[in-house]
Image (tube, rainbow, N blue to C red):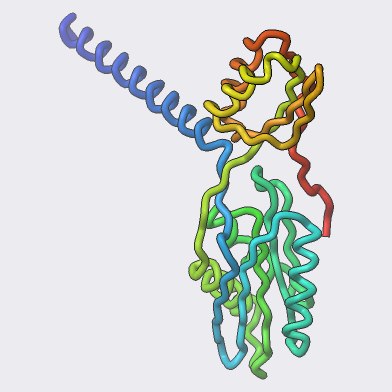
Length: 242
């Protein structure tokens, strides 16, 4: 193998390494840019699936807290009081870390799990999917049940309008009244939302902004004379269980 061939192979290897790190850096950047957004439902949606005379009615509902999930479930149970099974799954939180599934008397793993699988397949959160089953007299078996609940959940979610929301973060600024105009200029230019405020010789203002924009807002506020930042006040999230 001559020197020219070796140089060519070395150059090709270096180029591939550079390309790999470029793609990795780009992916990291894009993930960071989208880290404060999530997908959820714009409004309730409904779907129906029938298998061997068994009727599966699926209802997909927006729900932001466990308490809201409880309320929606109770409404569904009352509306379909004569159904054989009312199964469900939900996913909550921008990080998609709070979830639960329930088979409601069906064989373990045949209802709640496939419903949750359809939520996950669409990367949704703050959503509850309920599937009501009216038994048609013919047993479907575990495989048939799993497919039926999956298809019913898919019908409802496919009919739903999906929207993207941003994850908010908050901070509280303390400053002297003469510097109010400077603070308000930053708030307006950065498009932050005023959550609460009190004005006196010492003023207090709590602001909300999308999480990825928080560092820039903080940096600009810290340049305002007399201003100091209190400990960040996170927007509370429901961490209860149903």
